[in-house]
Amino acid sequence: MANGQRRQVFAMQTATAPAIEDFLTANVGVEEISSLPLDHPGAHDPAYRARRNYIADLARQYRLDPEHKIPEAVYTQQETAVWRHASRQLEQVHARRACSFYLEAKQRLGISPFRIPQLGDLSAKLTVASGFRLAPVEGLVETRAFLSWLGKRTMLSTQYIRHHSRPDYTPEPDVVHEVIGHVPMFTVPDFADFSEFIGKGAVVATDEQLAQLGRLYWFTVEFGLIEEAGEIKAFGAGLLSSFSELEHAFTDKVERRPFNLEEVIHTKFDYSDMQPLLFVIPSYAYLKEVTRKFIRSFDKTGDLSVAPVGVPKAVW
Ligand SMILES: [Fe+2]
Image (cartoon, rainbow, N blue to C red; front, side, top):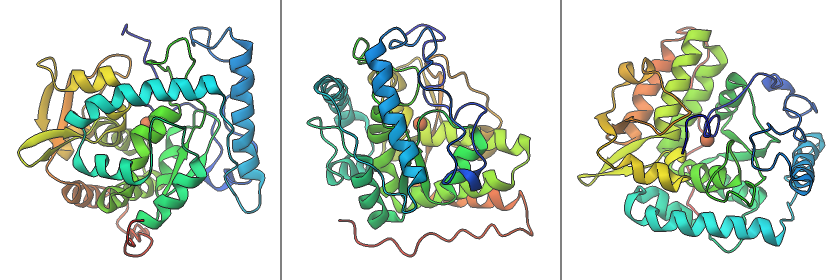
C-alpha cells in the first residue's frame, strides 16, 4: 500500500467537530459527506455518494431524536458483499493473531460475515457487558471531541462501508474498522475503563497533553499488542481491521517493544504507512493503571475520578 493511501484511516480526525456538549443536539461538526476527497475510491460514484448521504442522515436523526435511538441502517446487497469479503479475509488471520478476549467477544456479539451488524444492537450488548455504548456519526470528528466521548463511555462510530471497487482498502474509518476493529474490545472491562480514562484526560488536557493522549490511543486502541500466555497477540483496531497491517505486525519488519508509557506518549507515528514500531502491553489491567496515573497528573484537583457504570454485569 503506497504512502498516503492510508491517511486518516485510524486517526481521530480533523477540525470541524461540535463541542462535546453540543454533539447530541446539534446538526453540526462533521465534514460534508457528499464531497469526498478526489482520491477516495467512491469519489466519482454518484450512487456511492448517495448511500453515504443516506447513512449520514441516520446519524443526524440519532442526534435530533430526543431519545437518541440509533436508527436501523438498511444495507444493499453490494454493501453486504463488501462486508462479507472483508470479514472472511480478516477471520483467517484473526484466528492466529487476535487476542483471546477479542475472539471471544466478537463471537458473543454475533459479529459474523453474513450481515453488517446494526450499531443499535451492538450498543445494547456493549452496555450490558461494560457500560459502553455507541453513537453513530457521519464522518470525521476532531481529536479532543472524539476522545472526550470515551470519557462518557461512548464510542462515536461511522456506519457506512468502503467502496466496492476496493474492498480491502478504506481511506477513512468505516463500519468494518469500527465494528470488526473496535467494538469487541469495549466489552473487556479493564479496556473499557482505560478508554474512559483517556476520554476524561482529553477533557482537561493541554494541547501537548492531548497530543500525548493521541499517541497513547494510537499505540494501544489502534495498534496495541498484548502478551498472552507467552505469545504476542493483537488488540488494536487498526490491526484487527486490516488484513495487511495485521500480517505485517508480526513480520521482521516491525519492532515490537515492551510497553512503556513515557516512551509511548513521546513516540511520533506516521499514519500514512505501515507501522514499523509497535508496543506490547503485559495486561489490560496494567494499561488501565498506568493510564489512570497519567491522567491524574493532568489536573490533581479536578474531578478525574473514573466511575465506570457499576461493576460490569454478566455478559449476555
Ligand atoms: Fe479507529
